[in-house]
Image (cartoon, rainbow, N blue to C red; front, side, top):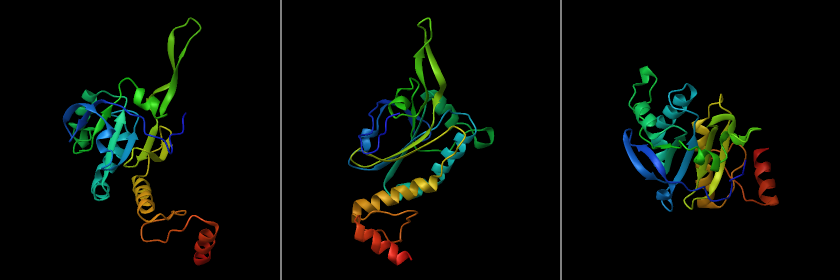
Length: 211
């Protein structure tokens, strides 16, 4: 699994569902370059159990992301038609109706593979037949991508483990604070708290104030 931190986010162009029900072709994260930070996250499958809790939690926090000028984009190995059906299913019936951020289709699994979150790998058996070892879905990967298209933060959870959307927002705040002020953010930093200069003296001064 390749580490993408500090590297350009892998490019893709694919079908997606936007605005809760519009199927569009040629969707790409490049539309946000120079304009927005991006939270790009993977989830295993539509019409499952942990996945809707995460997706709906992202939607509930969309105002927080929008005021930080952050685009949120989800992706799974389902087709755009599966996304569309799920987005048009009521919550009481296991759907995610009301979600407005884009859901990207990765039916070929190449996006998940390029981002290093595919929960398995293709191989060949003894007869030379193509096989897949593992589970052919995406782990719960999350990537914070800056306006230049560089991956600045990532977290990848195993399939049973849901993510913290508040932690994703905290990481956005930390990155934007660093970009604006040039100071680094220590452990458990939150907006309004003191950051520090990235030097031995800066660390010493910060720890002395915390003591």
